[in-house]
Image (tube, rainbow, N blue to C red):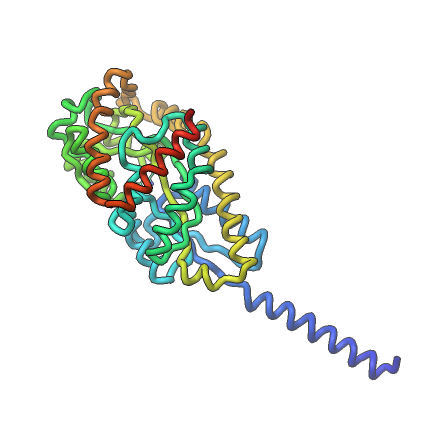
Length: 340
Ligand code: 6CS
């Protein structure tokens, strides 16, 4: 081969290489993902594992925004629906206005109390993995995962053991109407507030209690201003990660797979993280404050709260009609499958 031809061939090879690397750089996007919690919290663990999988398995990078960086939960949902964010993690506790059926998680005493059954339920449930994605899709969202964060615990200004003890107490709830019905049924005065206002409202006695998983009571310092923890066994804090649907639909088949696989990976890693987390957080709280009390309701005391659950279920039907009924039937079947 003449020097000239050799040079031509080399030039062609480097042009192809340059074009290939240019095209992969051109396809390398930075995606934005916002969630509702602080550094090291459960949603942050999920987001960082999701990021790791995406970055290890594609050209793309993920920018994660935590609570407050882009606003409250409702703000990040608006930004995701508008396509300003590609991904958002919003808990059903705030999604009730958009998707009334998402309030199903607030029917008290529906979920089992042991973590193994809860996790199996999220893995296997047809209601969670087949019905919910359609409901989110109707709002322009590709549901990636619903996952549990921890069992709900009430914190109150004094230890309580019955619905009568909650009379006259303003208890903060996330902003979904069904959760208000639950606390009304429990004998309290429900007070819906976005997260950013909860600590201050407890501190100034505008409200006398709230509910959340223990890791959050520890990480948000809620025990400092609401020190009486009451284990009622009435439900699990559930959350959900999702993508803007227009964005997702335009991805290549390969990228779509990476996104869903990243959600599976993040789910598994998050479940490992929450295993034992409640106990560790309770120990930290007890080491940090002498004012904290822990009340674990007896079965008889729980029965007094539980007997009020059917009225909340009736309200769920009123709020969601046939679609809610179908979902709840499926939900119950799925729960039976994992608890029997
Ligand atoms: O109570 C809340 O509003 C918050 N609780 C948790 C566990 N995560 C985020 C949410 O905003």
